[in-house]
Picture (cartoon, rainbow over the protein chains, first blue to last red):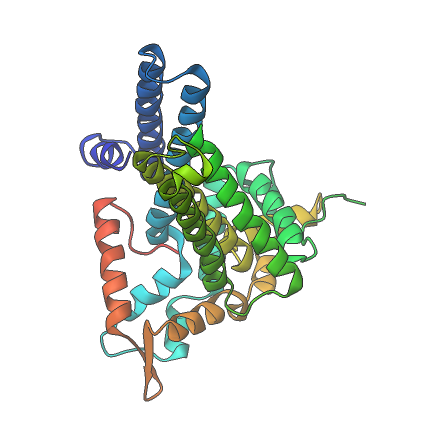
Amino acid sequence: MSSIQLLTIWYFKGITYYKSLITGLFCGFIFILFFEFYFLIMKYYSLSDSIALSLVTIVSYLCLSFCYLCFIQLGVSALRIRLLQELYNSPNGLTMDEILGLYNSKHIIDYRVKRLINNGQIIIKRDRYYVKMSITLIMAMILEVCRFIILGKKSRIKFIRK
Amino acid sequence: MNIFICGTFLFGIAFFLHIIVWKIRIPKNQMKTLILIFFSVFISGMISISFVQCNKSLFCQEAIIYFSEIIHVTIFFTAITFSYFLVYASFIGESPSLFIVWNIANSGKIGMNKNDLYKLIEDDIFIKPRFEYLIEEKMVNKIGGKYLLSPKGNTFISIIIIIQKLMKLSKSNG
């Protein structure tokens, strides 16, 4: 997955970072399906064993891909990385005020809102932002439900609007 | 089939144990406790299987799980466990993008303008706790009122910069 992703970034013009991730994930998935199908046809294992083994391989692949994406994504959107980068660029060190001057919540909002608009997750109408049903919103809802189940914390999303 | 059953069973036990511990009391260092629970269950499970394997005559005649299957179970268990850790990390840490999305979602048909968002998101919510975490993890040192990168932080950020270069990413993200 990662080798295909890197190849597409370096050798295919016009392929963005996100498209390269999807291409890598998709190619890796096809590769796995091909081998699983091959083992099924060759009858190395019984049908039930083949299905269980395929399931294990696919789930492992998807989970490892998720871990890889999270690690790579650190360099894209992690706030801690951005803070470390600001210190890396200042060998003499920075005071808290200087850090907050270079990178603050206003910067985060500007950058993230721009990205959310570009990805179609929020829309802007007469200078006001509205949310659209998107993967991010669904993810936010799922995370809130999981937070409630595991941590017992009350949901911050109003699921039912009055 | 052994791999699927064994991996799912071990993950299920670890998850169940984690929920029980969390219902009693949420640990102070959540990630470390989580790692301890999941990998203790996994190692105990593997030791139990090896014990049964070594004493086949006591339990059954055939091998219940082969060495190659143990490796496969390890990969399967590690993959789902680490994915769960990453999902869990998003429960405890506040993601700015999700924070913006659910706040706009809560505003409904009225919507929100940028000033509303500026009032809502302050440095104390996103920047300062993360900076304190970096100091706690000894990635950043405070020397005479100034913050400097520690050797640990320097190594970590160097790795990230290599990845950014490889992926042709912009350096002014966040």
